[in-house]
Image (tube, rainbow, N blue to C red; front, side, top):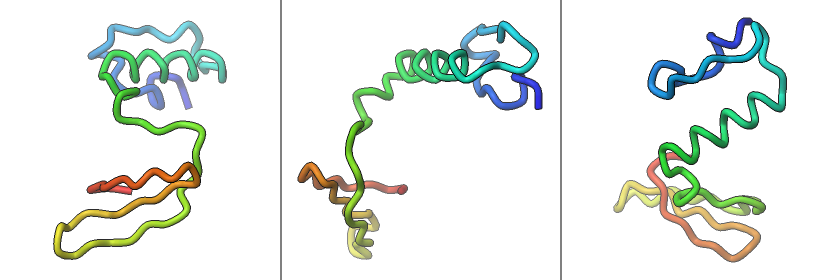
Length: 77
């Protein structure tokens, strides 16, 4: 599968893959660029494990707990 098929948002970012089949390092750097451009780091939690997900029907949100003690409400998991 060529890089144009599995690297999203190429038109929006103006990014052109360096090779027909992008390697792991290029894919990783591209993912970091996307996260920076769309401010995804502000919404992400890294270096943690989800320990519990419980659906709250009243709020229509997931209650997600992590091994760091985070409690997060999420629409999607």
